[in-house]
Image (tube, rainbow, N blue to C red; front, side, top):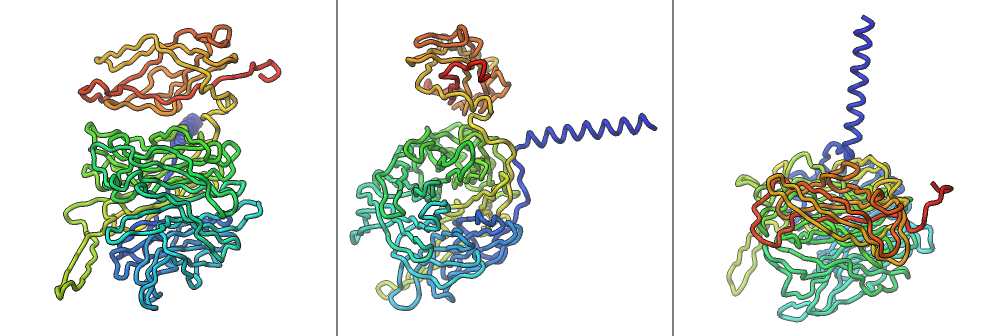
Length: 621
């Protein structure tokens, strides 16, 4: 009996160890899906913004539009229990004096305050008054005061100064503003970033505008964030020429740019724009959901004030989620990298397309990115909502996971939200019935926010109930946040611009799918480089195959793989102009497609070289 009991004990212990190892390997845990919009379960919801109160993370807000509902209202849902239950707290419909509201935005202020805004047309006085209606709540969004009207604009966002500086409590609204329109063609002569400011959190002034003139136009308006020193950073896209706004696959061009502008004086002015990246904007494939998103590290030890921008981009021949980050408060930006981890179709323009990317950063510095993903949708119209995270400041991302427990699908039986319009022209009736324009995108924006403990709340729409509803789920990411993915690497210097890699031989065995590349490191700087020296892979891609690293020194086959060149350094160092010994880098290709063009990239690697620019003394070892 004792042996049996002991055997059971060791069996239980073994399985506990196995389960613990599995739990550690599974770095992203997704909780139950929660229906946010249950109070309006018969109304189609599209386009939403989500927010959490950092001072009380149990308080959450989600706002959305109901475009197929009579009157085109918007709604606000609030949760007081950390997203477990949700209540409808505001409806901007005819009963509230509105004839149409769109582009909703919501945010928490300080001391339990909350804000909601939407572009509105109001009932009497006549004629209709168009502008930005702003509501304020003093109890975290449970009840709302009477709205006040700001000048007309487009796609607003809130940002709040939560610093300890002199502008603490200032509330900003950034939006797209226009200076003039020409009739009858309605050609925009000037557009730009408009900034409203409420120093006391209540009384807004502005807008202060930074204008862009034709043929360019601000298209792809993003949100804004506040850095720890009180600087406001605003994200926005600029279409180079209005004639290129509707590019069609398979060939797209860099028809736009993604930019930021800053205000370091409390919204009194905006700086000259800084370019993040070219933007291959494809409004047609994204069904209008082409809004970029900006997030900032709120104060983690490793990445405080690091900025992250995400957007959908068609430079790969399909829409992919791109991410770029800035380590110097928006002055310069990293080369964009793809976040979604699915494989492109064999032909340009065939998808699968990813749309509506969102990004948030937890207090610990974990970066979370979510998006509507079409890898499992053969029609390239439906989606599952997916999530991935980075523990190293956006250099690499964990394998993505499905967040939604059911897909958004389209079949011949799928209800199609429609709206009707009847007008009288020349004594004749004109009847127009149209489908909801956001049917295949979910709207111009979805949402995500983060709280302490590495927990994120992606917020999205899907039609699992037969109609587009709002859903959320808690997603928890485990793991330590550290530069370059490991403590020993975090202590090394970035050797960019100081080290070059020279290739001496490359072979490809088509039978085995193996690629071997012999390389040598060369110190191209004027100062010595000391061991250890390592190459860390940030991403690996292939245009024709699934590519993996076959001989990493840490046995990783993808992002995060390490090649240690320390043994190849003569005497543990590289003097200026000196080369290392040769080292073979091996790759493995699988699921290889036919090679039909000479320019096909078999392997494309993005990596960073790390080492020491000062010799490590024994006292420091």
